[in-house]
Length: 88
Image (cartoon, rainbow, N blue to C red; front, side):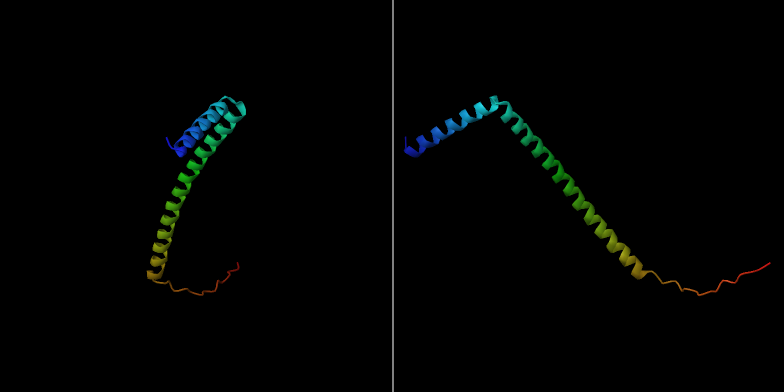
């Protein structure tokens, strides 16, 4: 075996030992649970943001359609009638 392979084996064994001890520690368990929950929340937020991006694109397309329709619509003539008040 090469010295690099021996060092990697030792590092792997040490890492496994640390993980085993951490899994038995209540504080470490809470930390891990919190990290897992945070990951799930971030995943959920990512999905929502992707949904919002799709909605923004749809709104943008609708705004363009409305602007195009407004340009093509004939403008109504505005009349300036004066209201007369009737007394009596």
